[in-house]
Image (cartoon, rainbow, N blue to C red; front, side):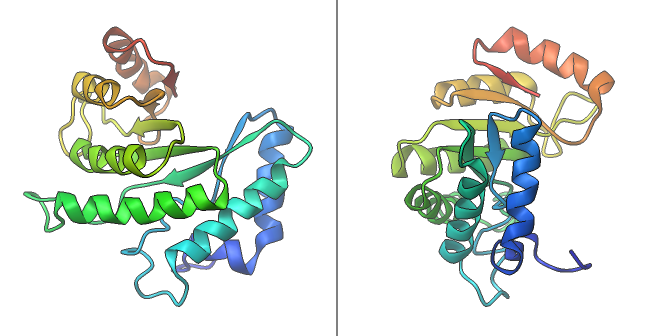
Length: 202
């Protein structure tokens, strides 16, 4: 990628590069590969000449191609929208839900095996995403949030609030990603294990 380029456009411009990267993970033992769809939402793509469905469909196709001959699964990978929700920002819960819904329907149609929400900091935004996934697909849902050393996310979500909310919403696994290294994340994981019986992702 060159500086300023949209990573998700590589699904269309350099598909073989992405297939090769996915295969590296599968050859290393990965059971799940994340499609290159992290920022493929209408807000982040609004100045792009390609739409959400086109990019997500290509991304899932590339990941599926890499998985041929293996038992690896393909995840529709969904990151934060890129705008803060009310009251901190201007995005309403309903608008967030609709943005996620568009991604989820596209990913489901394209043949994703599961949905992963990752690098989330706002539990309210994540709730919108999980509800959109639950109500517009039958795919399993995995969620990871990003915690700081103060045991909270950037928007102030605690480990216990994440665990209890997401467990109540019926996701299949929860955990953490990004921000800190293994040593710093150890207390976060210890806390999380006290609040959930779900499989934990690190």
